[in-house]
Picture 1 (cartoon, rainbow, N blue to C red):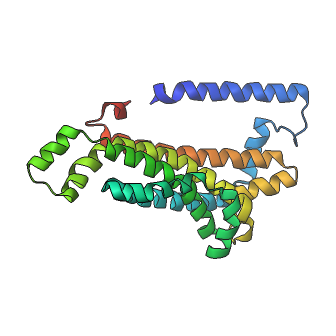
Picture 2 (picture 1 turned 180 degrees about the vertical axis):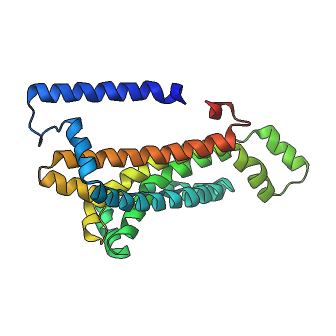
Picture 3 (picture 1 turned 135 degrees about the vertical axis):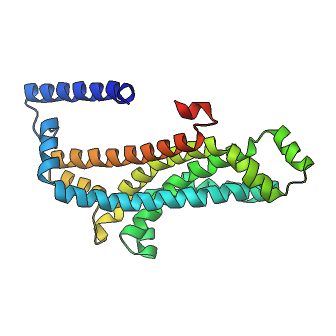
Length: 255
């Protein structure tokens, strides 16, 4: 544990110390670049307000990520089940990758009502494509010899999918989930920029926008830091699940 955490933690501490010294030496105004110590003071002094905003963002991000994981894998299984289904519907999955979330977020707030539902929908749209793409790639990469073996023993298509192809695709599935976890947080914060202020609960995106408008850069940095911590926590959770599921048979998962 120390070998994993120690080096990046040391780099972080040294980097923050250098920034603190540089800002103090230059006398940079707080509204331009706050000192790390000022950001820490803000985190402590406004912990209740920031914790409430973090919880609001976390709820929307987790809902969006959960939907992207469940529906993304289901869509990928459907696409992998038939060449004709894949040819007919695969191009439409690109929509989730190319849709300009800034353009449709206001419409989602109208359709779903402002607040949690609209923000979670934005997080889902942003994060679902990596799950679909990576799961589908894993399903289509199943060892041909094993597929022939299943056919030889008369296994049904359903049994082949859930007993061979999907388990073999798990490394790719977890890769997609790791990418989706980070994107879900980004999608949540961006959606809060646009529609979060309209809801009853206000997340970190609203904190960032309002604080930047009022020149409170220390609060902006504090909110960004919490959003990054949320993303890291979600990535860490997916990484933990990946090691727990794959460590016994997939060598890269042990690293």
